[in-house]
Length: 200
Image (cartoon, rainbow, N blue to C red; front, side, top):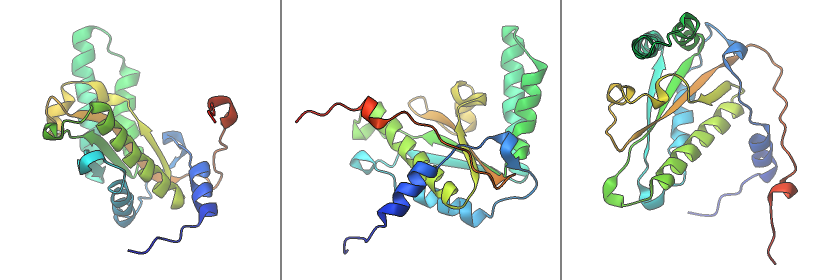
């Protein structure tokens, strides 16, 4: 194929303009078209991947699926917290209610191919880059989105529900919705010069 003709100004604009927007900033009961979610996932599929292992896997919750996810994570929280003696009703309610405010929730999973003999860090990094592609695509559509690692992300009991094996990882949840406002969050970064050493 011929070398693509990229627009560097637009590339810079979307990378530097991407923002996380959270549940409080979501517009409820106005779902995003599934076609846009499919585009988000297709762009995730083009992340860099060593040995072409393509370790990313996704489970998409929308419609009644949001309630199924909410019930699962809230129920598992209640079971675990009650057993450990640290149950909090407010946490249970948050886990029950917040998913219903999103249009789509995408569970982010890392599926290892042990035959590739790659360091786990490389597979985690590949999935993270896939999520960055998701972030950028959501931003290009003007959507509110964020990647969170709350709820059952680190609960071993959740792996089976997502069809994951011992060597695999649940890496959090990518929430997507239309924003409740036209105002876009302001970003803050310290100067890159403070974080780079040049060796010439």
